[in-house]
Amino acid sequence: YMDCTPHTIKKEKLDNIVLKAIKFHIALAFSLEKVINEVNTRNGKNQIDSTKNKMRANIRTTKELIENEKTLKKRRYEEMKSGIINLEEFRRLSDESSLKISNLENEIKIYQENISKLEIDERTSDILINEVKRYADVSELNKNLMDFFVEKVSIYEKGRVSIDFKFSDEFEK
Image (cartoon, rainbow, N blue to C red; front, side, top):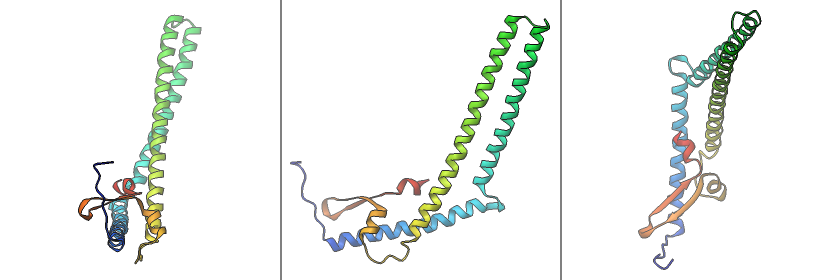
């Protein structure tokens, strides 16, 4: 790159900048843990568990609706066999029932996927916070610290430094 100019900074200064940024993220993790605990225990209820329980209840209700629709479908078959409805009406109603059942089964899949996502997010944040806490008393920059926290360090004009952290997306959640 012909237009680029060399950007340099003393190693000690860069180490201090990176170490301060990492310590800030460690402190943020501790604060985040407190906030998560407060949100989860507000009014004595765990909000995530409450949401998952509501979704599980919706799954049970949806399964009951599927069974009801299957029973109705069988009843329509019996009505057709006994001449109450004709074959064309039976096929139309059967197709409608099949579509309802398919839509309800898709709803169940969506609820199950959302429950799984919540559980993964819970485990991920717990694991991440516990891993970050291992570095709580860090006093100097080392390879393990850099490997765990830092994705990339960029140096710009006038000694400006940009640090991309590996877990920034998880902290934002």
